[in-house]
Length: 115
Length: 113
Image 1 (cartoon, one colour):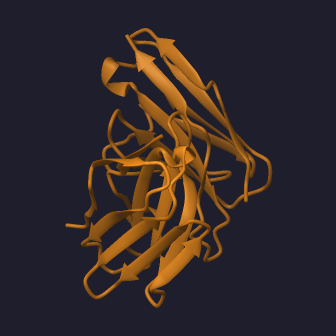
Image 2 (cartoon, rainbow over the protein chains, first blue to last red):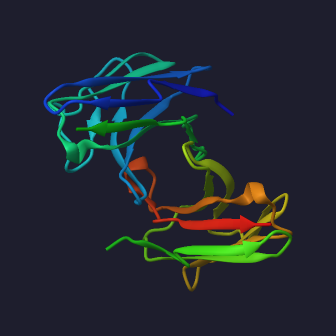
């Protein structure tokens, strides 16, 4: 299994500002993902973070709003830009070994509240 | 439309009792079905993974079943403990890529003494 840490664990931000969330994995992984979990709802995939290239975004999510970096196989960041109260959610980093494995491991999440 | 539905939405049981959570899906094609446990304030943790050919998979007191013909799965928890209080999420993969992974809304389980 993979151990995933996220920073910050929670934050309260003002409308119009940006927050960068960090995800660190204790081993090299092929696949890395960012999810959003809105209050009372299940997880929605934001994007797949690709090492060395631009992230692949799902429908409804754009790079200008959620820029993602993945400089190596153990680290990624997600920025929530120009925040509004609708961005208040839990943001989760997830990894998978890939290569035919469907196992997914999740970080503890970052609870974001936008005022 | 690919969907995953879970029932009940929430459940309260007494410590030591058994319970069964349900998952129905319309995802096609089908690759695999996973059950996750999500404690409050934490990320989901995998309990079981089942492919098309598997009917049952156990993990300690958790037993998952899969009927690929009727597109139904269940998660049975035996001799519940207070630490079982969590949200249980059914996840169905509909293809070979992660953008085809559909998360169910979850069942919130509360185990009371």
